Image 1 (cartoon, helix red, strand yellow):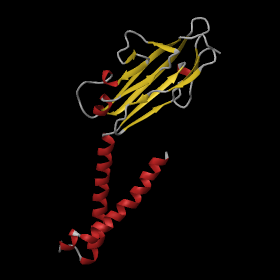
Image 2 (cartoon, helix red, strand yellow):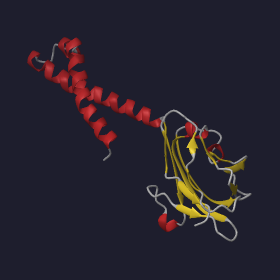
Image 3 (cartoon, helix red, strand yellow):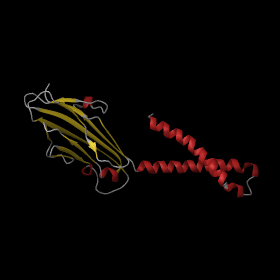
Image 4 (tube, one colour):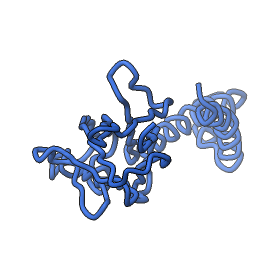
Length: 207
């Protein structure tokens, strides 16, 4: 259980009773229902108000969650080491000067927000990318790699969606200098209510 979940549970446990007691002190509808014994009106009001406010809280929480989305981008060298917590290192081959990295992307959540989202990663001048001509999601122009999520998703529709994507990116060195290395990490265009996780990867221009 992460920290944010613990905080949410803690706040819920405090806020709901406080709001319930405050609302009941302002207006208890059961005080005006005469067939309920006077001694029980407060207890009944407390029970009903507590259930009602908790239901409203749950509804509000689900509504907010329905507007959220999540993007996870993991780089890895092989399926056996695909781990979002590890930062893989790839080395441009000394003979042909090429290094290869795999990319896995997972989208979940609000479809409308995900359609507007994309990732971009700028390469240094000593690297050039080569991607498959059949790749419908990833493009490379002017040293900039761009992942267009709208091409992964339906053009219409609402609600939650999930989609995954895999690709292989070849990086070609443009210099014979062997003492250069860099950590690369894509950036997501700022979009409200979308969380983004990535591990990035490191490229070395020779050993």
